[in-house]
Image: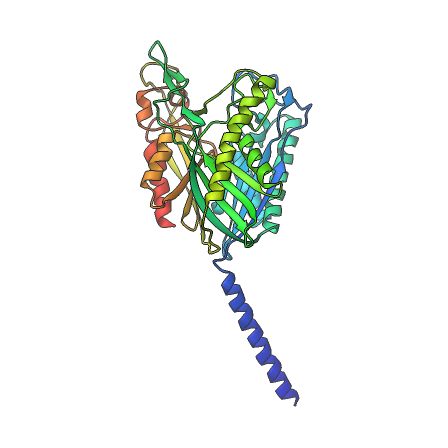
Length: 428
């Protein structure tokens, strides 16, 4: 009798294991999504030096609005990925190395499946980018921010839930090409309505199985410089104003992660020169509302969502000839320097291609990638997984403006970026 009973138990156990394996197998290819948001605003009395413009060494004098990191974690039952977007100017290579290593070790998300990007606001403190900051107070603040980011990624992962996704595109006239010719024949930062400018607003929508919104990933090509070079107030600028507007519309539980497209030569239509006082708050609010409303409109217009998911990530580093920073001139001149490395990253969510580049990319490169990509829904996310500075089109060297003067690439960045990303896209 015991032998029969024991055999019965073995059969039941085997059946349970088989059924469990089937259930787990059914989860492979099913999307789960989690999101989180963490405040990284420095203390009001910190007066840290600000980054993005020269001449602001005295440090910030007030806080106009808060800085955040916004995180979206994805899971297809086999692979996990994270999109980590911060209201900072850029991502230094050391910042990328430290955070990608910590996220891989402490959260379990591989670096190849991580997009660590900056919104490129010019209203953040410089200390956010220096993990080797010599000043003890700045170093402590930077460490605190790094810890907050890792914990927020953990929080987003812990909140993973069955989800669906959809994608859509819109249009907004908030940016303008900024490479303008002056009276003396030089090319400098200005307003150039005839220059190339990508007005596309990309939106990826993540909702639970009841249709409740979890997060939006938005992408648009514009600098976070409404505050201008005279601003001494901490601000997430236009990227933050856009996210805040959409998050207020949907409620605090929803995360709207705004990413910078190929915005190296794209400024907001309005850009000031003084502090964000009462006369300056309205332009930031208005431009943020225009972009925020379009993000919401696109989100609401997405008619299909799918729960099926396949995540693929890959990265590579490409090298181009280097040069020293130059000076304004009517003709392109350069002094040779060490070669420049550019990190390229691709995260595929089904057939949606998120293409990361470690620098400020001119809009012509982003537009070319969209044209040549094998995927209709391709968006370039710049200032991602490192910092290579300005990366310009081959054509730009004929009009040597600020970006050409500032780039550390002598030539070849356009082909290296586009062909490198295409190589990754075709392999994934």
